[in-house]
Image (cartoon, rainbow, N blue to C red; front, side):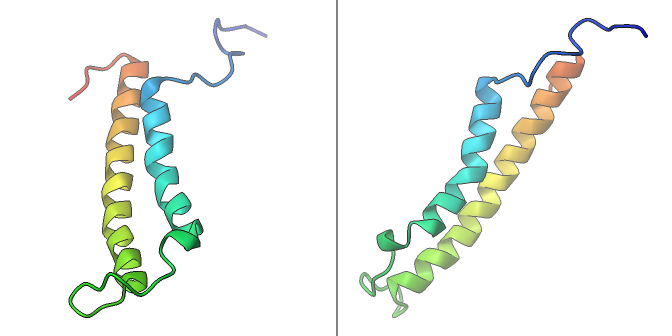
Length: 85
């Protein structure tokens, strides 16, 4: 059986991958920390904080997932030796 150099290495932790992890973990932490948003005030356009905070995280989560995906693609291209866009 042939042995390729580097095939038995563990996962590589790079700053880009750490940022990707933070981008993907932030929405979970924000939603699981209920004490930070379990209140009525401040209201936004008459909507209690509890509701508009959660809806804002839908938009923020989408943006963070997009950033994580783009960073992951760039990291994978760099690992394969391709030129980043």
